[in-house]
Image (tube, rainbow, N blue to C red; front, side, top):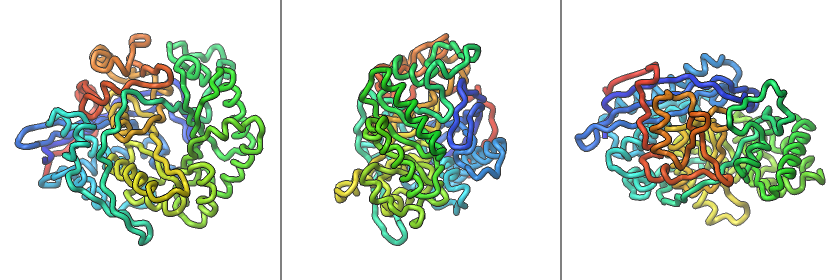
Length: 473
């Protein structure tokens, strides 16, 4: 395989509901689409990758404006595409990933951005391979064709281990949605002024999602706001109780808002001691990224982590920026990491296998890999991410793009019928716009599992504005 040329395009999109996470608030969210033309076995093949460009996720330093952050994200994607284009041949995805990892010496601010750029390129390689061989991702992965005999060495301060990427097919026909409850999301209709209701045919509040979509998993964001966070959990607990569903499971997202594990444990002790939160507390599956990425892998900030992780698994997310970070986290006492396509496909598969390997020899704590989201939407980004978590056997995945976006309205309306025709199990038309179809808290994976890297439709690159491009060499 070798690169012939590549193009990067963008389309504008707006959220239907503001998405507050940490100190950021997402209302405008450009969508990026990368197209790479390859030559495989003497034949041309095209691969696509897509994702949103969110404010203050890859860079939470506060030093860059959103416009500057968008340029940073585009430049990271372009740099990775140009690097791949400079390789004479690409013998396997593992080799490409290894060379991409070694191609940069990232600063503290850009590690996650580098992984984002690498991930977009990896996704194009996979998509092109699926198209060329006429096989789905899960088939290509489990055949060994993607990674061949690739093995990588992980290093946590001199403690080394060798891991092969996960190459099993554990896909199922459906996956549970873990619905995000953002810091500013309305919980009931009473939280919305009558004149501000959307009336767009889609669920608008937490109560709507629980009742209409049968959601059984929630991802709740907390912000290190003490009593306000506690009261927010109490409000969420009351809404869940009023819907009659006592089987809801939770993950708690700390969004990097805590300075140390002892600081988070102090908050958790408040939660644990409140009699009305006992059911919620006992239903928490994992705590995600409580510490700021700048300190999350430091020993002095993680004092008490190993003991706390025996009670509740604690995982990293934003701190999972390089190929060694999950291994470092496990050595420090964390319980694992998240799978998030924007952080790297190979890295996710390596981490999935690492967690399985370590768990086999560690009965002291329960290791976890969760499926997470970058507010991604279809038809490329969402489906590729679903194909990844499906093959890894993850049973529930954070999905929030369907909540914060009005379906796939950001795409050209001329292609809506094609989307419904190819992915009618995953989307239905709401107000004439394809919207994610959630039934009994789950989404179908049938078309995702059987179509390339999750999607069967043409992404129609011609409808995007070209912002970067290049040729091989």
